Length: 186
Image (cartoon, rainbow, N blue to C red; front, side, top):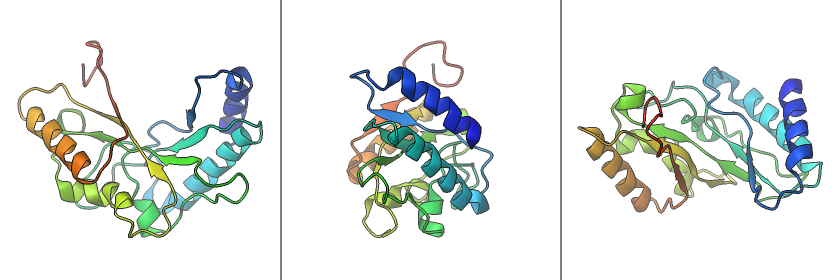
């Protein structure tokens, strides 16, 4: 935790006056956080976000899902946001106010993860955050990464994912990536 706070302190000091910074993705694909460690992970992310916000910036705190051990089917690193529902643990917005947290799952298909997917899997991993049934969720959501080489069966996977995103009215996404030298999606 201390190392993350120190790193983000340096980054915030360097970038806090830049006009085009809107968010801080606090921890990329924390795949070694166990499901039972969700509460401690969120505590760490709150501490990091608080240290950023204490500098006076108004950035969003972007928090990804954790490990690949999801219900229905295993998921991609960064995709597992089941802790919000299963443990009821989310950010405490007391210190700095609401509307500063953004859940950001990473969603990949079989060409990256080796797993097939279904709407039931997407719903269980992160899609449920859109239906209003999870009272512990007080955050917006953007798909922080999704992508594929878009060949073979992955054409259907991506088309199905986009259809699902439209179905649940998820309009906030970042496609990964458009450069041809990406190891798994180029």
